[in-house]
Image 1 (cartoon, rainbow, N blue to C red):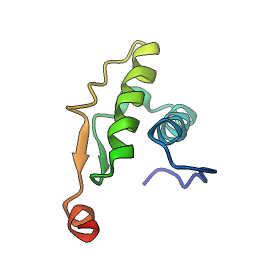
Image 2 (spheres, rainbow, N blue to C red):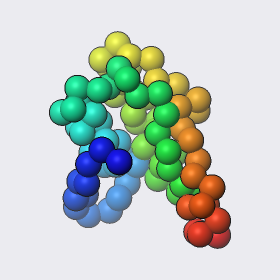
Image 3 (spheres, rainbow, N blue to C red):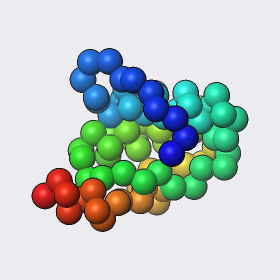
Image 4 (cartoon, one colour):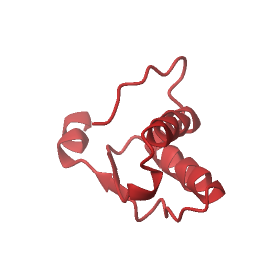
Length: 79
């Protein structure tokens, strides 16, 4: 856990990505992130794709499909 950020309105993948990206940038750890853990919510799929694009703009390789970890307890709890 790095930070708690209030996301106003709908928690779209694009908004979530922007919030995560801003925290990682503020903490100066963009280059150190290798995995982001999340549940199976579809907004997290979108978030990861958006993060891949944001990282790419900074010249950082972040393949969304390889950098996402899925949290089994969250998956079981949501099912």
